[in-house]
Amino acid sequence: METSVGVGLGEIAVSQNCEEILVAFGLGSCVGIGAYDPVKGIAGLLHAVLPEPLNGSDLSSTKYVGNGIYKLFEEMISKGAVKERLIIRIAGGANMLTSPGLSKTFDIGTRNIAMALKVLENQRMKIVSQNVGGNTGRTFRIYVADGKMTIRMIGEKETVF
Image (cartoon, rainbow, N blue to C red):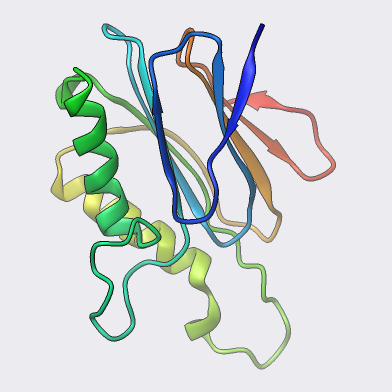
């Protein structure tokens, strides 16, 4: 029987339990980074909130994209995953504040996506697919049994991406 494991704001979940589904509900401007090692059957999901700390404090928190990605890989590797085998997908990063007059400063989603792409490129990690941007929230699921990753946009059916 499958069990959903919610991955909250600023959290990471890593699992080898083939009956678990890792889920980041309601990704708006937040970005979800999913990773899967198909040889070891290890899945990981990060639900990052902000691209980076505003004042340089709290650098160790996984609520920030950069540090969160490093921690996700670190935790997966500690369970036996091999970084070079990881299948990476990203989702989220919507612009949820679309009122006229708001500056680009408030477009956290775009900044989260840019930071994720930069960090993954620096880590020499290839992104297999992405479902990012727009102005609609989405839910990101990783099925640990086979590494399938899905997105469900508000008002739409769940799709594999």
